[in-house]
Image (cartoon, rainbow, N blue to C red; front, side, top):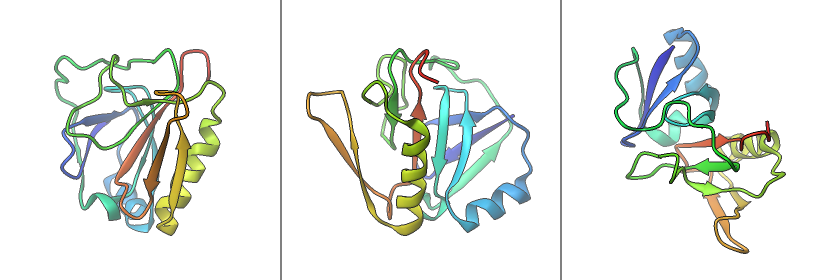
Length: 148
């Protein structure tokens, strides 16, 4: 288990697996990396070291008042922000039935190719996010409870 910080983002993400620093560093140097995360939200992290500028790994420490492994009632996407996510404000909600595996592949492709990606949201009727894969440091995809 290890903690991961991305660029200047204030959020500390906990990855619930063992850390092989050299292998992970090589993977990050090669392109976007996909990792499971358990704190502050439960989901899948897609991170691009090229776009983040820096990614640091540390031994887990205290995580304060943010949720521990919060599973959300609806699928959501959390993007870099000045504020860490909470259960009540995890990011943008996604429509039920969103194919999270396909969205993960689309984000990796946008980061790899430096292309734009439009993601439909359900935060507001008809809402959407336009992601610039050339500059997006990371995205965390959180499946809703019971949506896998």
